[in-house]
Length: 146
Image (cartoon, one colour):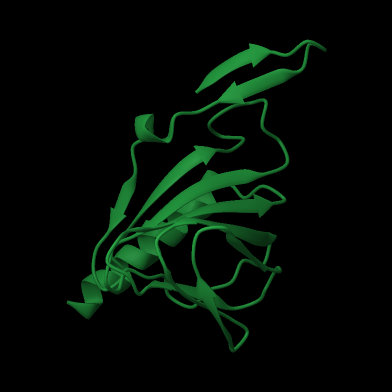
């Protein structure tokens, strides 16, 4: 992450996603999570958390889950798939966004031959500890499904 000052003295951050180490979650989920920006990665970030979620081709997914502490804005950057939010199904493709309000159950699934890449913005910010706990829970679920 590179920090610089803008013309008005404000801090501007630049992140190359390829420089961030991800966490792999095995089948049945088959996805990678990268914490791109959060208050734990840079003290200048206060009000949001940005995570890059990459679902593997042909079935990479999340489980049904919700976030009680804040909403999740999902911006679909590449690939194709489906999402479910509170029982309604949505077709996913580059250039669409879906907002899951706090406490609302949602799931994403890659139905295509290429990775489904999702920029996930949490407002207000969620803690890295919360993310880590959810990654651990997903890994346990993946292990028990083997």
